[in-house]
Image 1 (spheres, helix red, strand yellow):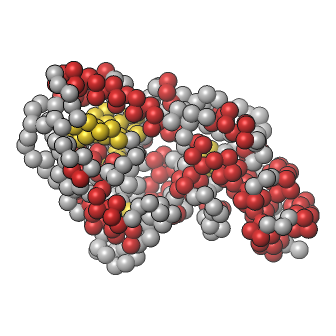
Image 2: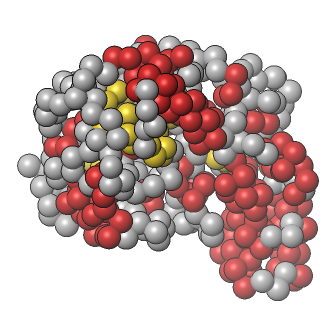
Image 3: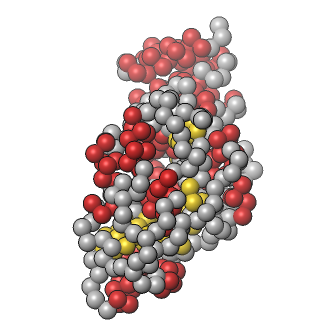
Length: 402
């Protein structure tokens, strides 16, 4: 049997997704119909009972170091997350809801620009706000149908609950080896949320599906962040590094990040079920411009705060801040194997106001073994006073051939 880094046996699939629901409540098909009326394509019901085995799983992930960087995810939070009834004292049922968002990228012009990639979920409006608005309408409709005030709590990635555990047990989808929920007809391209209600509703049955022997997502992950089926080391994940990481990105991961500047879709794109995913044309998730999908890297690495806000306001991208996005762009330029990247990288190393960006630009220049890259590094070493930047410059010069 395979084992983790701490020699704990690995489950074939998460046990809490295979629990049979207890019979309770009244027919709940009307909830799914109301959800669709409110712009929520998929919905399913489960109860508030604790998720068997989930607490142990979460504590193991913390102990194995797979959640380092999420400083707020402490053991106490993991314990509460495994028991939804601790989150809201009157909860009787949980409605797991999802917004599908898969669509093919728009046409990329053949203009010679070296471009980065933004994960699909961040192309349009911030889904947290979109889903919360639609869930609010759904709650109002449920109250109308119930004929009484309904105590409810609306959750969109904002509370001590494990979205995927709820979605799996409710039958909304099933747990893939890449740790995402695979929803029939939509693959894993679904944004999740929950409504905790004080209504007794009949729970849905978990789906009896699994990935079989497929390991496409594990093989495709550039950083091998999926360390085993159903186990993700978040510290290696490109999404974590480009979004949640506020400081320097580990040097060993930088060459593996390709041209992703916000998030990563590699494991989802590799999944065979993506081939059957329906395209979703939801106005809320339509990109306002090409820069919301595939921005020019030379522009990203030098953009002003005003340009950053004007382009990405209202989308999820501001979470990484201008400095984080420019840092990611510097890494992507270093990975592009195009000599045209030297000029914008030299400019960032010389004049960017953020030391974080200058340091990553120095690393990126070490990927271009020419005179111009060496000259830019040597000139910056003579002028820059930041300790982090100087260390990156010295390492870059050592890496370049003499």
